[in-house]
Figure (cartoon, rainbow, N blue to C red):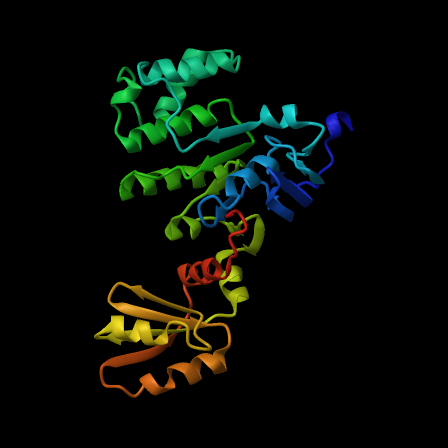
Amino acid sequence: MNGGQTSAPGIAIDVKGLTKSFGGREVVHDLSMQVKRGSIYGFLGPNGSGKTTTIRILCGLLTPDSGEGTCLGYDIRRDADKIKRKVGYMTQRFSLYQDLSVRENLEFVARLYGMPDPRGAAADMIARIGLKGREEQLAGELSGGWKQRLALGACTLPNPQLLLLDEPTAGVDPKARRDFWNEIHALAAEGLTVLVSTHYMDEAERCHEIAYIAYGHLLAHGTVDEVIAASALSTWTVTGEDFNGLMAELTGKPGVDMVAPFGTSLHVSGRDKAALEAAIAPYRHSSKWRWQPSEPSLEDVFIDLMGRSKDNFQG
């Protein structure tokens, strides 16, 4: 088979034992995972914990120190240049030309990739991303949400097979975020595979599968339901008054792994159900609070994972 194409059909990324260090610090540790074609795969974790490095290695943009795998059927070590030609990358910072118009930016990208009809390709993309009527507006004058649409249009104009999104909706309003995600799902339905790093729980829940990475280690992965179930967290929701006092008393108690306010309620969670119930028993009879067992949320799980993550990148 030509060019090292060796992956199973239906699998976009298949890697085993990936490791990467910078300056003696391991930022990716023994990572093995698969990503299905046409899926949206979310990466979550603390800032600076190796998410972006992991995504770049998966796509052949960085070479691992050890490990092996394929991306889009190509070997991530030998065929990095072939992979790059099939990848669109949308960075956190708006990276198009501020002093060119919407149309000029898209025509420039089309020419850069040698597309046969740059003007027609740009016009089609302008219609798709909802920027009709703004073609001649300078990119630098667009609002955050419109800039985001333009950046997505530029990334997907050359018809990549894989799209990388690095915290793509930071700083845009909720409606723009929702519109953006609707478009991502439409692209995935057409067969595009999407890797996205995000801090927003509602965005994580829009992904087909998610991975939680902390300081180079893959701590959890699967569908949202699978990740929540694997956490084995028991959670109680508390409503009432004087949460600050209750939080202070419960934090650090044996059996209590997480205490966090959620709006007008408090979530109290632990991995050992019996120990958690013993810890909260003295408080459940108080008239100040109402206790109800509840399903842990994705946010509960991630707060718990963050609390257990050891920051091996510090000193």
